[in-house]
Image 1: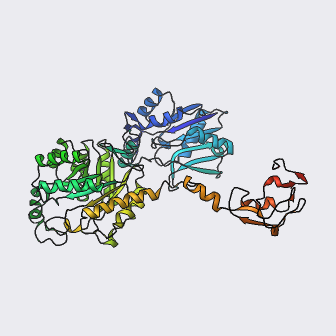
Image 2: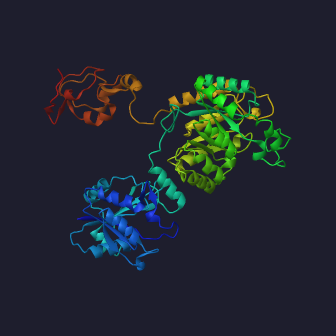
Image 3: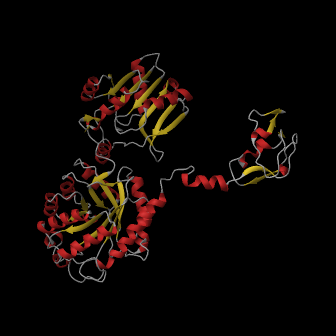
Length: 541
């Protein structure tokens, strides 16, 4: 008999009432009970708790209750909790206890398959670990021997890289993973995600200099180059910087407010026109708002996604406002500490918005090559496996546009690069931007990179089949071999084409008697050989 025991105490030191926190209208303990009840191997489900509220929820789901006192709370080892449950059940037929902690609601392993593995291999104890090999407590299976033992028993691990909910941030990630709004993002028929073409954003920023004809021309050329989207920046200078805030980018001698005041003339009418113009040209247009009013205005125009700049990553009020629109959010992470990124993600998720893209970024204009740190793309992919990762690139364009290509090879699924009609212009970010020729080259190189990267699977490709047959070798007779000769190493060679016995079958051929005459250069086949003095079944005709 196999029973599931779910340890679910009422209080948690780090996250109050954790086991009763709800995802999709159900408390965490619900997901643990459901996981156990879906198993065909588990005979009974018990919840070990000191909480009336947890007990009430468990009973509604058909679980039985094991009451435990405060002596089994706090930092008590879970093994003691499982042993307490085992003793309280007092059933001699119990062979295994399956321990399922409620604070791993997005667990992925099939429980019956894990139990079958334990039974088949005679495993005494099994527990789960995350992708780093750290024990996470999502699942623990204990045999009767392990429950009775006072000394260590034979333990094995299986990986289940689910969320271990300890903090509010963990809870939001688990909530995101159990949401239906995960995976690829689709915007006007274009996908952004792991299995989608790289989403290429031409960052026009304020390089249109608030001239509609220039903005339209930039849209034309971005579409012609094959970019997925063109992006602008929307702000009002007095809301963005104080009069005293000095500029921090190369070649600028005036204050930030004075700089931005020359570039903040577009409003609802202009952006509405540009968004419609881009639609007609077949390219997505959107903008980065830098204040609440600008964000609301862009939302009212039906803008399909939002970009939040690195500088606004710590602004919870702004993050909540933008995330609350329910549209996809691209968030740059330049000049941010890891804990700041964690908090920003949790803030966006707390609004129920899980369609998020994180961009690796160096907040330096321009970014020197040694500061680009493209390996951050892999770091972000590793740390946030459920989030789409890309790059906002502030390096000056190189001749071959190789830096964005490297980013794609490292796993970036979004590339954002500043774009201008003419790099020699002044008054905005022209000097670090790519021009139309560079943009076309960048798009071409990225699409080539996607093709050559492939899917990474091993095996013989269709394109290799002809060459495999004609370039590989077969075992052939090096000299004339007479019927009855014992085949020796000096009698055989390895020659093209393939299709006969592969050279890796040489040990099968050596020492066998030929059951027919074999001419020089003739492929040696199994039915030409005798096995133990008996002619093999498949005699050639």
